Length: 219
Image 1 (tube, rainbow, N blue to C red):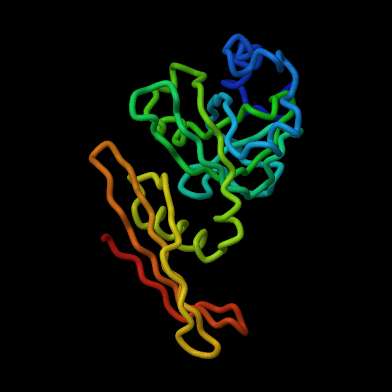
Image 2 (cartoon, rainbow, N blue to C red; image 1 turned 30 degrees about the vertical axis):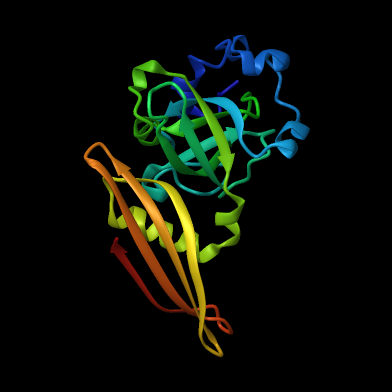
């Protein structure tokens, strides 16, 4: 089934994992979750496995994107290439979260199951030896629409490589001149050493869509 995806070897171990035994999956058995379920609710219960990634992806986005906070979804998944997903680990106290970017699509996965890069899997606070964990998956359409928020998120992720961004908020938008707009975002970053909050500010030209300036600082 995965002959064209050699990097999915770890996921192969769990492709027949009986995720439907859990209460939230009983009615779907081994089939993809109906699309109307995703339409009715943004957040869905599901599961994640992990992979080391590969050189080629179906989305044309490398697994190293977003500091390896990346994921593959099923070919029948409602999630799209480049989309940001919030994944919350339900298997441990504290329910660790991580924001990941969809970089690949693979056959055989139900719509409520995704394959994280190993670093993203570990960022959820679980040893890779566990293999499969229960999670909630939430698409972040607001972040997709707010492209400057995603721009600053990627800068923050690069600036703090040992941290994982788990939350973001748009806190302000101001017109600083007839052709310039300022947007301000805050991000919550987590690591084993603790949490920090970072504020990112960008000023851009509304006519050319070019960055005038940006700033990133801890608050």
